[in-house]
Image (cartoon, rainbow, N blue to C red; front, side):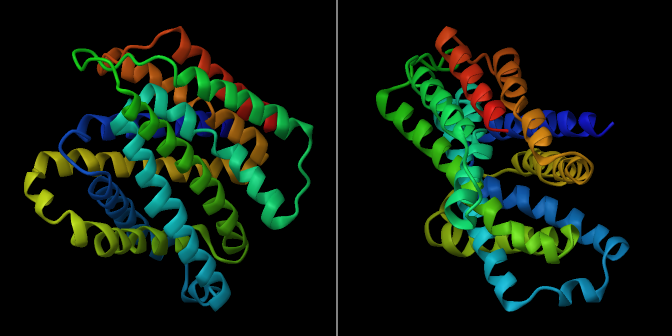
Length: 292
C-alpha cells in the first residue's frame, strides 16, 4: 500500500514537471514557481483546521523559524526555480535525472552539518552520478523541430539541475529539525505562502513585472494543476509513505520519477533520447539506489 503511495508520488512529480515543461516557453521559472506554490498553499490552508490546532503553531520557536525560513529560501525559492530553469534549457529527459540525485546531496549535507556517518556506498553512488552526468551532457539532440542544443544550453541546463539537487539536499537537512517539533501541515502552510511572497519580492517585482503581460489565464490554469498535482497531492503521498516506510526505501522508490519524466517527454514532447541520455539516467538512478 505505502510502496504504491511512493511510486504514485514519483509519477505525480513527473507529470507536474511535464506540465511545467509545456508552459516554459511563455513563462519565467520564478512566475511558474510562484503560481504552483500558491495553488499548493491554498490546499494546505483549507485542510489546516482539520489537522492542527493553535498549539501546533506555538511549537515553532525562533530557532526553528529561522531554519524554516532558510529551508524555504534554499529548497523552494532557489531549488525549485533552478529545476525549472534546467527543464526549460535542456528538457525533462535530461533535467529530471540530474535534479533527482538530491537524496545523495541530502546525505552529504547530513554528514557535513549533522555529523552523520558517510559510508563507502556514498562514494560509489556519487561516482555513478558523476559518470551519469557526463553521459547526459554528451548528446546535444534537442526536442523535435527545435534543433540541437548549444554548448551554452547544455552548461546552463546541467549546472542548474545539479544546483537544484544541492539546494534540495541542503533544504531537506534544514527542514529536519523543524519537522521533529512542528506538524507537517503547519510547516507546509507556512512554507508555500512564504515562498510565493519571496519570489514576488525578490524576483518577479524587481525584474519580471513586464513579462507578466504575456501570462494568460490558460497558462495559470496549467500551473495551478501542476501545483495541485506535484506540490499538494504529491507531497501528501510522499509524507504518508515516509510515515510508514523507511526513508531509504521511500527515496529509492521516488528515484523512478525521472523514468516517468523521460517517457512523458518522449511520447508527448517528442524530445530526442539517445543511448547517452538513457545510460546517464540509469547511472544516476543507480547512484541514488546504492546510496539509499
